[in-house]
Length: 458
Ligand SMILES: Nc1nc2c(ncn2[C@@H]2O[C@H](COP(=O)(O)OP(=O)(O)OP(=O)(O)O)[C@@H](O)[C@H]2O)c(=O)[nH]1
Ligand SMILES: [Mg+2]
Image (cartoon, rainbow, N blue to C red; front, side, top):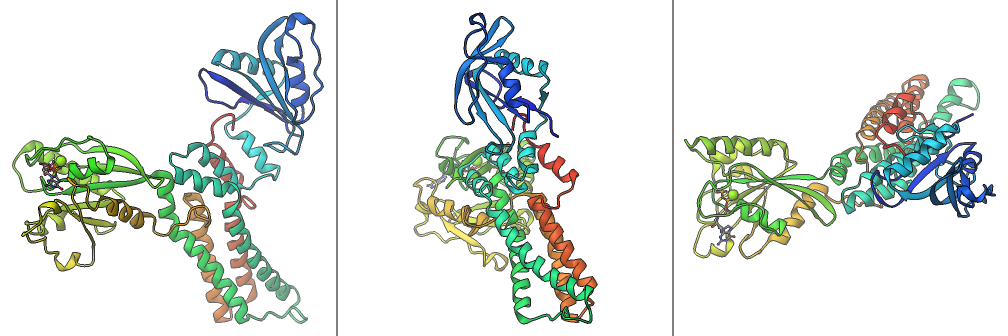
């Protein structure tokens, strides 16, 4: 038997309305104890709560009226937690909400733990773990794209995808187990070409989800773009042009930018953090040397690097080879194209010959839209947010990596004619790993880790 819990569900501070949520078997009775249809001095009129119908009245503590409120009672299972829930809409002030909550506690309600309402919704089978995690993602969404992703997960796109894979594997496991239990009878196991196709489709799907993980993470965390290159090539001008504001100082004096300058923006709903850095070159100037070291740190921290060049100057092969990362995407931009007439464009050495390079002008804006599109394409590829199941969640990714290991072992075993017991064990482990994502086979530790990230009241 669960107890009845309560918490303030809206952010702390002053506002029009603050909501207190109560959930558990005694919600209706306990709410009725502190609620009256009339103010305290009018003689308590005990309310008759009707599920999903708003009641107007007053929260009273003895002969003191605390606040005028609206109360929304919701009978199980038609509520957020699938338990009896009462939500009290009071005026939003820290003191008034605290008084109402304390009054509930004095009648035996327990303070809710972080995420406990959503945990109850999960334990009561109303949502699966991916949907519970999506609730936290919706609350924390910082961009349109991350909200869109979280909303799709909230309606169960990932869960559905996992369930389809589990259902194929479960059918397969059942046949393996039948062969183990009844080796001499009709249970004999045959690995057909249809089996192979079906299992391969599961392995491919898991592989796709793992590969998309990094791209999908960008939806949540944003993409870190570092602009670098030699002094005076127009790095700061490009930064300002992309941001559409005067953020970085621009002069024609080489070495203007020293400290990295950072700002954020969204491009087509995807969050970016963009960093302008000091021009990298050989110098004895102490301040510049420190700035260049900081620029290198920013290249190290970037998800994607924009390396700026200019017409009429050779490709700075030495600087580029020392500073450009090999493990992350680099886009080259030849800036100042408005001045390019009669000038040679930098000649790309062989090692960069296949790299993406764009011709732009920060001064006129030429090519800047193309640059924006290229940045998006490079980072999130063809990720179709909303339609595909995507996994920007490290917990999900780790489970999928383990699931794929078992899947691969099982498929290799099948090709080699391995005994059914070993195959069944791999199939079962794979199903278990997929189940930790939806919560079907999640341990208490996993649940604690998921729900501890929630705020109180959700
Ligand atoms: N004609 C033209 N001038 C540009 C363009 N982009 C930048 N400039 C000029 O080039 C000079 C240097 O620009 P910045 O944006 O300060 O260059 P930077 O790479 O940040 O320079 P440092 O911070 O010193 O390394 C300024 O005079 C800009 O006005 C462009 O596309 N066309
Ligand atoms: Mg600059």
